[in-house]
Structures are given as C-alpha cells and as structure tokens.
Image: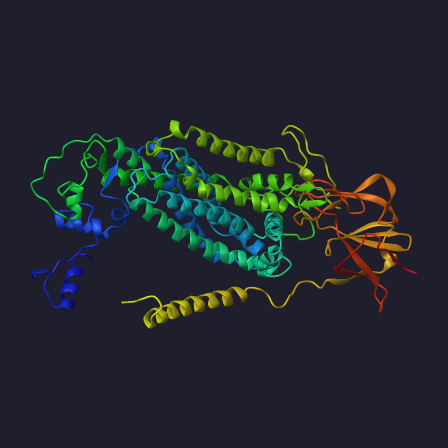
Length: 453
Length: 168
C-alpha cells in the first residue's frame, strides 16, 4: 500500500518522486535506513513526538515512579475502549436503564466481561490516580528544581483536578444502572450539594433537573458521564502530558541535572541544529553538565517505549483477566420507597460517608449540618490544601525527585497522617458499620431486621 | 501605536468587551435552559385515604414518604425524610408507648425513627435525638377533602408540632 502512495501523490502534484525538492514522508518507520527517515519518524510518529528522544535513567526505574501515571493512563484508555460498546447497549431511561444493564450482564454475549472490564478499570483507576498523587507528593516532584520555565506546581494542580474528575466519573458511573445503590447515592450526593447555604437548593435543582430524582436526573448524570467529564479529563490529560515534557520529564531528571558531574565537553566537529543533532549530541551545547551522556540518559527508543509497552499491556492483561473472574454486582432496581439498610457508598467514598456522619455541630442554639461540614467544607479544604501545597513547600531544590527527602520530613509526615486518617475512615465505613450505620466489629453478627417497615 | 484613552484603544476595548459579553450571555443562556420551568414531579397535595381506614397508631405511606399517626379521631403527619441527607427513616415500635407534652399538647409516642444511611435517631414526635440529623423531622398539614372525605396531606406546607386534625 505504502509503495503506490508516492506515485499518486507525485501524480497529483505533477512532480516525480525523484524531482529535486520533493521529499516524500512515509508515515514512519521502526527501522529507518537514513538520517532523514529517522528524523521523519521522530516528527510523524506520535509516540516519538510524545516522548523525548532521550530519557533520564532514573525516571525509567520501576522503584522511583512505580509507573503509576502510565498505569492510570492505560486504565483511562481501557475505560474509553470498554465504554464504547456499553454506549451502544445502555439505555439512559429510568424505565429501561436497569433492564438494559441486566441485559448487558446476563444476555449480551461477552457483555458481563465488558462491563467487568469497565468497572474494574474504574476502581483501579481511583487507586492508581490516588497512589500517583501520593508518589508525586512523597518524592517532592511538584517542585521546580531548575527554574527556567518550569511550572511543575501548575502540573500538580492539573493532577489534583484530574483526581477530582476521576472521582466524579466514578460517581456518575455507578448511578447509571439505576439500582438501589444508584438511587440513594444520588439522593445523598445531591443533598450534600443542597446543604450549601443560600445557593445549595438551586444547585441541587440544576443537578437533578427538578425537585425529585426522575428522568431528568438520569439523563443529566448520563451526559456528564459519557461526554462532559471524559472530555474534561481528556483535555486535562493532554495538558498534563504536555507540561511533563515542558518541565523536562519526571522530577528525577531535575535531580540528575543538579547532581550530575560537570565535565568539560569536547567541542564536536560537526554542529547541527536538527532534532537528531540534539539527540546525538552534535548540536551546540549551552550547559556543561553531562546530561546528554550515557551515564544519565538512555535512548527513548527502545528503553522508554519498551517499558511503557510493558506497563500498558500489563495493565490491559491484568484487567482483562480479572474481568473474567470478578463479576460486577447489580443491586435491586431503584426503589424510592425503601432505603437499603445500611445504605453504603462504594468504598472510595466511605470515608466521606463517615465524615458527614460525624461532623454535625451543635453550637449553642445553632446547628450546622454534617452534610455541609463533612460533605462540602472539609473536602473543599482538603482540595484547597492540596492545590496550595507546592506554594507552601519551602524545602530546598535538592529535595526534588527524591523519596522521603530529609528536608521534607515534616510535610511528608503531615501528608501521610492525612492519608492514614482517610484510610482509617474508609476501613471503619467498609468493615465496621452495619444496619442504621451502627458500629459492629467484623465478627459481630448484624441483627435480623424486619424487611418491611 | 495604541495609547491609553485614544480612539484605537477605545475600539480595542469595545471589541474585547463585546466579545466577552456575548460569550458570557450565551453561557448564561445555555445554563439557564437546564433549569426546568415546568415541574412534572408528583403533586404536593395528595389524597391518602379515608380517615377510618387508618389504624390507631402509625401508618407508613411509602409514596409520600410520610408517617400518619392516628389517636382516636385526631391525626397528624410526620415526614419520613431524614433532615440530614434525605434517606427514608424507618419506624421502630417502642416497647412501652409513652406520653409527652410536645409544643404544649400532649402526644402519645409509640415509635422512634432511625435512619439507615448515617445513623440519625429521632423520637416519636420527630425530634432529632442523636446522630448527624441537624433538625427534627418535618410535620405536614393534614385536612379532609371536601368532596369525598379523604385525608389530604400538603407536602409543601410544614406545620408546628401542636398541629392536630380532628375528624368528626
């Protein structure tokens, strides 16, 4: 196919392929035979465009980044791909949504597997994105160690926005089956919005498209889930990747640049300003540090691309296999008449459910609803704190891209304390809460309660 | 050259300003279209049945999320919607009914209410006793329909806790 393309092109432009000045660009080649082909490959291959020609050695190590960002991206890819068939099979109507999900689960060939891939990827993505944030924090990777146009704090803010988007995507996603979990999650979630003083009820009405949870509610959350939030996350993802490149790769590269031995660079005989020249080190140099040397860097092809492929394919394989064995639950159809007892959110929101339970404040004659404090104020403060943290961090540049830097000991401990509290609340909500949200030890049986009221 | 306050500067600002205004107005228009003008929700005034069909004590009406209490020929209605985050509370019969003075009126309490979502507890008159609930369960207005004598609840009309409907 590729052989007759130049002819048609030549024919249409009226020039033969050998004509002077005519330079045909094949799409790209894995095995370039000339410098020009290699250069074209760098320009026209998306992966080579995305990745730098040379990558810092430490940033490729498994134990520095655990490749959590790549895992998150692979899961996002899986979610989009597995979401496409579901988009054809799911019907966003309160009468038919539950039945259509039930059909996907029990009737459609491979339907339960596709739904399981989507669901497992969603759960794992919450984990991967959260762990990625923890990794970036603990390595101080949101810091600009070199300056000169670096905006790593801003990329951290984008990352926080992506975590929040991921959580909203999960929330809007588990509403779609319109089962009991869905109905009561919307009830509680939108009532949290409603608890904001003054504007709360208006926000709730806008979210659910009326005063009761009905068809307008489902279609709103459906559009958010399949269009608005994925679009937002896609834009943020592209921006996030672009900033990583602009900031000079992972923060460990900053660290290498700071600690690299400064060696006199021999002047090179031929100087070229092309991209390949930069890759080969024949371009004029500005810095005397040996960042280009083989000690610190490796070629992206194939050291970076190989590992990226292992991570992405490994993630796909893991989810694909898990989805064969782990079935996705479907609760009873949504019933506005009966609240399940206990009514529990998915595990990643149970710490919030625990907080809204415990934060109603009675001060003299004034009562502030825990829905507002635990559902709006505390999460809002937490997100604000996360966003502001890079500007509060006054540690030296040497603490960038290093696990548990001594100079960041105190802030790492504060951060880990918050993480531990959230995990502890999640454990309490998951394992220690029973009917009427009472406290039960895991070995304590739950009481038999009449199912009818 | 643009200088502050000259014609060129004015036109520049006018252009940018009208662009921003147009974008803002269109955003507001798009957002406004999402706010419903007509409510297709269930009506808030509902006939719930003949007074004599209600048992003495409590009856739960799931569609209205409402508890209707009857004591002889007096009636009152308490919402089953938890004031914390809107789950439906469940009634639990007290081992011993007790009588309490609520808002100047004596009231026989036969149940208490528990919320399955976050563990709020309410006394039989709707008072929030423990858990995250910030305020008592709402009492709603009851009346007798003029045409067929059914009980009518107005879910848009909260009432004080001394409200009683006496049916002749």
